[in-house]
Length: 369
Image 1 (tube, one colour):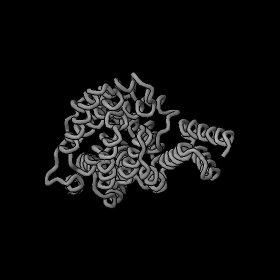
Image 2: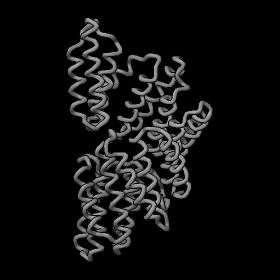
Image 3: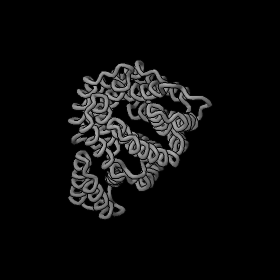
Image 4: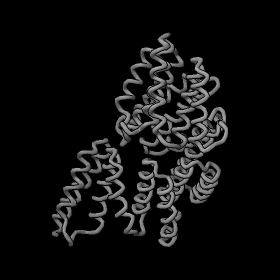
């Protein structure tokens, strides 16, 4: 290929990356496919890698995890000594995790660890973030203690090499585990530490996501701090507006706003927020869609339409029954048990709590988890 052709194709990759930053996954994917269809054997290796990374990122953003995994697996098989390859491994781990393939996600990350050490990349922020991402998969598989030990090691390394981004990621995941264990005050403290670190950077995507988590924790306190939570949700809306986040992230933002409105007693806004959440939620996100029906049930119950509330709760039960077993499913079962208990359905609440325990691999339910 001539230098001019290479420059033209690189410009297409750059255009695709800009599109990706504005959540335009279609344009990003089209540019990547166009470049890959135009290169030949003389094309620079890094150009081909960059186009494949762009395609994988567009596929992931579009919810095509199968396509992203296929593309990323090929990239991971071609290790090279720079942060881009470590980021590819992390993306592959994340895609397997998001598909619920936790053991596969863990094995991919752990298999790459030796190569990362051999290439002298263990000190990179991306390498520490990979450890954090693997710890997240370990947590979702149900081993909280091992996940927390892994995160503590990541925190130590991040502090030693002075990597605020990696440290923020580790605090964030540790916060998730503390919340799952019922330690909401400690979880909120860790989430705020992560938030302060992200605020000092320029990652609007993760800044908006962690701010949304802080809001969730503030809403989940025994004495909910609704004012602070709504303020954080307002800021998160602005931060996520142009960030390359998934529709799942946007749906969860609406779910949090619904929760705030329910606490405030604003049923009109709560219904508007949950309708938008339902519109955004992917069809295969069963725990999230079950959460939508739980909120619809809460709204109906607040309007004294008990039959309608029970119907929504039944639909949530059906979704959760086929949702498998992980922490997100367990939390949603627990939420369902709580609202059924409030409705006076003791048997239904008991079954939901038992299902929550089973989804977490527990013999008894840890209240507040």
